[in-house]
Length: 297
Length: 238
Ligand SMILES: Nc1ncnc2c1ncn2[C@@H]1O[C@H](COP(=O)(O)OP(=O)(O)OP(=O)(O)O)[C@@H](O)[C@H]1O
Ligand SMILES: [Mg+2]
Image (cartoon, rainbow over all chains, first blue to last red; front, side, top):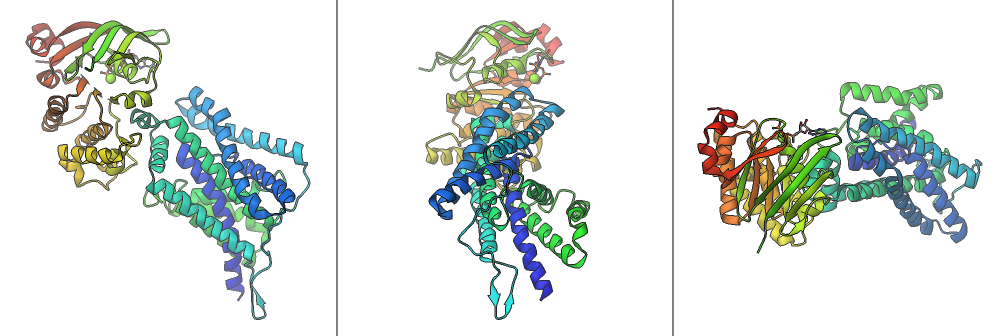
């Protein structure tokens, strides 16, 4: 029983890491940038969702609006900052590092703005779904309707974006523009616009993550920071390029954490994340799916 | 009637470096013009300016009567100008089928895109058996065929080709040049072909241009250039 419960607990937190990892992989796949601002973008979208819920008293109204806001925010960040950076720092090591550093700066900037508007107190962002585990007879498992919702949301994000990348013209343009911007441009693709759409997609995915995860804890300017780290580890384990890999990476991490917490103790959990990452990378340096199967999914 | 490519007093600079100075020439519809010249003569620079990849060009360049300078590459593709860059013109991470499809992404007429793709596969049948393979698993010659095949899917009117024979075996070069010749003759394409391999290029070309240190030093019929003893010594190596 304890084994099953630990597994379920791992899956529900793993799904959360997966969602964040998906958002990171989406930016990576469309721009080749690791976007550390993702956490703050997701938090800001979640605050918007929170405000809408407080006014409309309806989570289901706030969710799509928060996602829409996340998409617009992602697109704006590209439009106002990243695009100019890409123009200025075109080649050499600086071209790879400058955008990443810039996203770190944006992370701080957005969090400060959030702090100025909403303060640093912890807010509750409620959903109509219960956070209490399902009960079978006398046993309550550590898996609630809210957890089920998170797992479903992860699956939907995976299927929707996986489908777009794999089966649509837009997806082909996104992949071409990120792999070889110059060749893509010479093939007639409007690379700048396509990248912008990539940023919007990633912003939307991050907003989904924020809006479905936050009800399981609290909302504050930094509330998704730790998740960013876990999401990043999960994304790297999955090969950084693969949506399926990101989900599997998240689940492995979640289940790994959960078992370590249960059988080893809470003092090592934070280190455990890096430990799991190192082991995975030692066995498969490109992650589970890097460059072999997962490029399309 | 298409007025072709008209270049007049074109100058291209990289900051203080003047890579092309004051050159003028034309490429008429249905004409294949070879550009030859030593390393660093400015051949690639010329093509990059004509496809919108270099903005700092002055002078005149028109395609079918409309200026093409300071125009984005993606817009020029829509106007029928496709540039296959030196040594990299396919996306290695995508499959052969996906690379071909790239040529049709911006086109409305999707049924003609499908027709164009099957025409490309007819022209280069080897690609048909590789559709699901990644482009980086292709040989150099197959990659070049894929690049040309993809270009054709966008139904170009002017092809700018930068050293398509680079690193290929003579037999493959013949095959590719035959295909280019076929495109010019049967599809009425204009082709501006940059080549180190001057002999092969001039054999299929109507006219040839010789660039030296950014200046146009010769512009004549291909047959004349082939018979020019000085040129043979300096560019054709025999
Ligand atoms: N991005 C750049 N910045 C500064 N100078 C450049 C740049 N690209 C090319 N050049 C210079 O412009 C001149 C022409 O270069 P270009 O690449 O057009 O020559 P090419 O004829 O294509 O040579 P190759 O046969 O080796 O391909 C060279 O002197 C080169 O050093
Ligand atoms: Mg060159």
